[in-house]
Length: 136
Ligand code: HEM
Image (tube, rainbow, N blue to C red; front, side):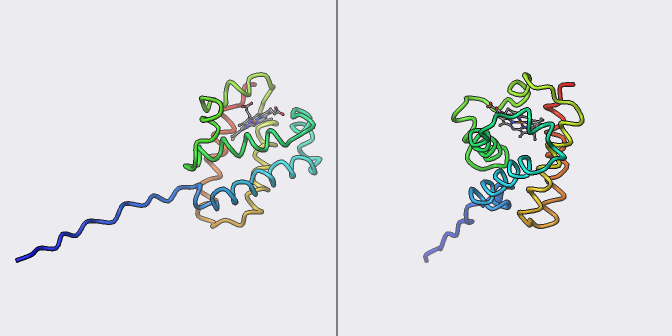
């Protein structure tokens, strides 16, 4: 008599990175984020804290979020660590700056048209993260 062994298929984990559209979705998000920062007088305060060329920071935010959302850990691979608190230390970030940052992120997420359930899960996580880098 022969027996047929069946093995369970490998477990697939769907990450927030996947749900946001992987690399293409995340690139769209960070581009929309900094575009919003450039064109919105409401956030002139935080725009002035950034360098004139937003290309490098767009790439860094993309790389950082990639790992944080469960995709490739590009920022850690490049920099050796994900510490955000330290890299924001030179900038005076209070509640106003934190809220301007979150306002840009909310506008950028609006452009992505993501599922409402994912959106309501991700908003408070960004809010906590942005509050973590507040140093005033
Ligand atoms: C969810 C929260 C945040 C994330 C994920 C984030 C991410 C990053 C990353 C990855 C960098 C590059 C760090 C490096 O040099 O390696 C950076 C730089 C920076 N961030 Fe944030 N950030 C956050 C919140 C904020 C907030 C609230 C402000 C308020 C103004 C801010 C202002 C800046 C500035 C001014 C720089 C330097 C930009 C430059 O070099 O031109 N960030 N951020």
